[in-house]
Image 1 (cartoon, rainbow, N blue to C red):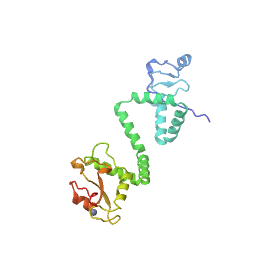
Image 2 (image 1 turned 60 degrees about the horizontal axis):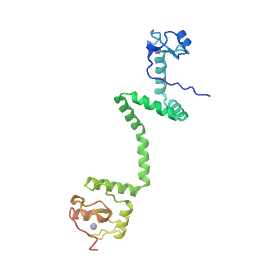
Image 3 (image 1 turned 30 degrees about the vertical axis):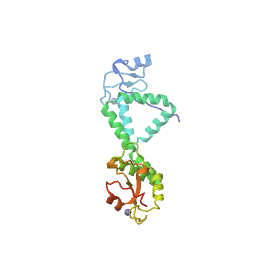
Image 4 (image 1 turned 135 degrees about the horizontal axis):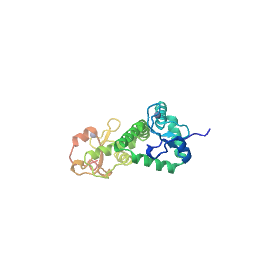
Length: 222
Ligand SMILES: [Zn+2]
Ligand SMILES: [Zn+2]
């Protein structure tokens, strides 16, 4: 079955249309305009092929779209695939003609429509990459505390640092999993220390708090 593709054009300049169906047929115009309202009260262009009212057809399509948008989207997707370059050109033109308010609405609606999918994608990635997520969170936290731009500690670097310390807190000597090792900055970020592997030592949370904003290198005393 060949799909009929109906493109609802923007507002037609009715003043330039033939004034009767017969005149439209004579000139080959797809529309004509009599200036008389349709049974539904629209004063709009009519189709030469079936005398249908342009506004009535739009209303029909809007109602069908509202009831079930999927066939329309499917058709649009198929059409886009059939003529990708033309489709891009048309949608760019359509978007450019919109008011800034309408553009914002569309952007917001699209964000909302894809929010669940994006969240799910992020969740799945996070579940598959727990160590990278933790490294990312620590970097974000370090940035908030004043680390310099571009400073980064990868999950691998942090793992290597902990391994080098035998999985123990360098101050009290307790080991994971009794305690959780935290990233202590030898030179605190607040004193211009970098958030980089060479400035990190593993301390338990308690020792990290006790050391606070002082520069103490426990790596040299063990
Ligand atoms: Zn009508
Ligand atoms: Zn400790």
